[in-house]
Amino acid sequence: MNRARVLITDYAWPDLHIEQSILEPQGVELVVAERGDEDELKALAADVDVIITCFRQVSEEVLRAATRCRAVIRYGVGVDNIDVDAATALGILVSNVPDYCDEEVADHALMLLLAFNRGLTSLSATVESGDSRTRRTPWRLRDRTLGLIGYGRIGRALALRGHALGMRVVIAGVRSHPTDLPPNASVAPNINTVLQQSDVVSLHVPLTDQTRHLINAQSLRLMKSDALLINTARGGLVDTCALLEALERGELGGAALDVTDPEPLESDHRLRVRPDVLITPHTAFYSDAAIAELARKAAERALAVINGERPPTIVNPAVLASSVARTRDV
Image (cartoon, rainbow, N blue to C red; front, side, top):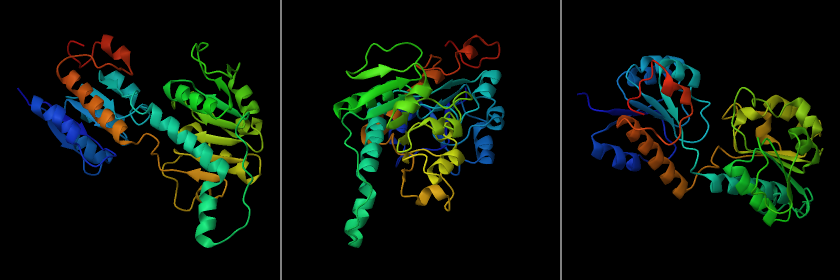
């Protein structure tokens, strides 16, 4: 019987000791890509049981080359870097780890809000340069409105933080009325209402065909001219060209982005140098505890598939009933 093998396309932390500690004692061999480009992944995927991926694209071509693979597991929440439709057609299960960084991403979104409002980067530059000119006047955040588009675990965590600052919280993008709203929070009838009412709009929805460019030229025109847009979810939720044009025309107060489209932005992209834009390099998820939890849960999901068990999260449950499903006893 062939030894079970797991391909790791890429990872965003120093080493794989957690994954190794879970998989190798069970006789599972780790195969780690060096470059993570499509040609390398196609070659490495030909003889593995599970693929674990972070940011690399797991395309239909890679999946077709992975003739033995039973599952693709995403280090993280979104699966837009995996061709889920192709995986389903091939009988390959797709899983993810949606429950590992709620507090970190909410903290990061709050940091972006506070840093932008208080002018942190320009104030720091003022001290370094000796320039004493007054910068943008911050808002008093109490009684301002924080708009959340999406109210999953991260949206809920940010709503509590907004409430702690004394902000009103208004929410859209929920299928049913939440029962766990903090005080001074309400559900809007639609996303447009949130865009129109909010001083700060924060995005917390997955990237799908329906949500791509959710924030576009039309939606940006609905926002207040001094409003702040925060995106810690996926870059493709925002039409980058429309955002830049709105900022250049003075139709938006600013943007604070942990994710961009494309990612990273080109070195000469105009968003990089605008004083009304803060950009961090897709690090909202990152902390010691979050990374340890993410690595452990991804490895445990891989081991479950190898052992013929069902992982706790399945992105494409239709594959379970498929006549071509490659999973055993799940």
